Length: 256
Ligand code: ADP
Ligand code: MG
Image (cartoon, rainbow, N blue to C red):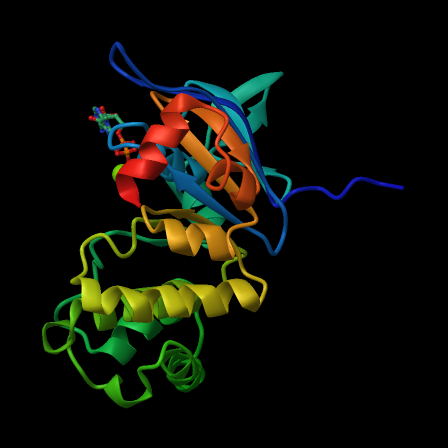
C-alpha cells in the first residue's frame, strides 16, 4: 500500500526578518480535498507562513512542496536557486489567495475583476471567461451583481467576488488569510457559507481564521501557532475541544 502524497507538504520552514525569527520550523501536511485551519495570536507568523506557500516571501530554511513541486526554488548545480519571477508566477497560478482586504480592482465591475486573470494570464477567450465568471458569481451567490463595481458592493459581497476571482484560475489550493476579519459581523456568515461549500466540493484549503465555529465544523486539521512554532495540531475535536497545551487553551478561550 502506498501512502497518499499530501498536496501541501511543508517541512521545517524557517523565516526571519532581520534578527526576528518569525517562523522557527513549521511543519504542515494538507491532504488533497482537505481543510487546514491555522489559529494563533496576532504576530505568531500565520500570514508570513501563508505568504511563503505561494512565495510572496522567500524562506530561509526547510522546504515547501505543493503537488510535489518545490515552491520558489529550483534544483541547480547540486543546490537550490530561487526561481525567477516568471517561474514564480507560473507556479502561483495553481494557488489562489484571498486576503483580509479584498484587493479588487476598483475601476472594474465584478465580472471584469473575475475575467481579468483568465484572459490576460491564461489566454482564455473573452466569451469563455465571461461564461465561467457568471457561473462563479452564481456559485458565490452574486449572480445579479456582474455589472456592479466594488464600491457598489458590501464588504461581504466584495470578498465573495475576490473568492470567485481566485477560483477563476482553477487553483489546486486556496489560501485564505483572515477572510472575514475586516467584515461587519452580519456579513461574515455569507462568506463562511461560500467557503464551506467550497470545502464540501473538495477544494484543498488553508484558512487562517479566528472563526472557531468554522474551524470546528469545516477543518480536517486545526493548527495552533504561537511564536513561530506549531504548538499543537490535530483534529478540531482535539485541538479546539480538548487542547493539551495551556497556550492553546488560553487562546481558544480568548476568541470564543
Ligand atoms: P500573524 O499573521 O500571525 O499576525 P505575521 O506573519 O503577520 O503574524 O507576523 C509575524 C511577525 O513578523 C510580526 O512580528 C510582524 O511584525 C513580522 N513581520 C511580518 N512581515 C514582516 C516584514 N515584511 N518585515 C518585517 N517584519 C515582518
Ligand atoms: Mg496575519
